[in-house]
Image 1 (cartoon, helix red, strand yellow):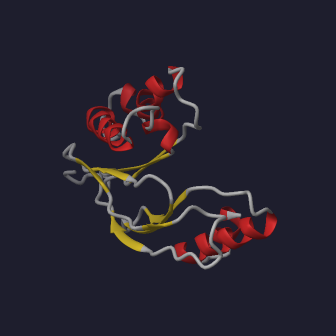
Image 2 (cartoon, rainbow, N blue to C red):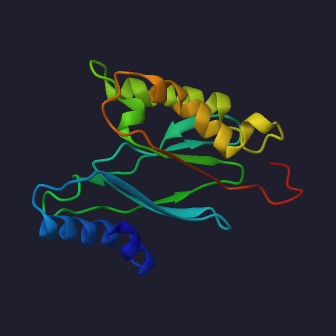
Length: 174
């Protein structure tokens, strides 16, 4: 549903609202969290909407990481009148954007913010896709960031990670 609404050229809030109403129409018992970002890597401009999903992370080229402030609505499939505000973002050349499911950062008995903080630290350490080292490719970074969760027995939820990088222009100092 998200893909269909997105391919129709709808802005993120309409993608979320349309998907929300579709889930409710299909089955009142269906619900899902979602973070949808429309990103133009040539300009670095992005717009984002969230529905009960963990906030995206951004790794700056200098290695600093931060949780992006993307206010969100409730999970999809619950309230047909739910609102999903859109947040405009700018991703600088050399920066890496990370979207992930709660299964990657949440463990039973711990606060999800601790898991998000640990992911931020790991992203700062391993997340330099501009590095020529072979262990710094996006695939290698994703493998490192998900390794512990993939092998843990106490992760009852799905684990997913999506990384996007805005490559610096050839010859730029970044």
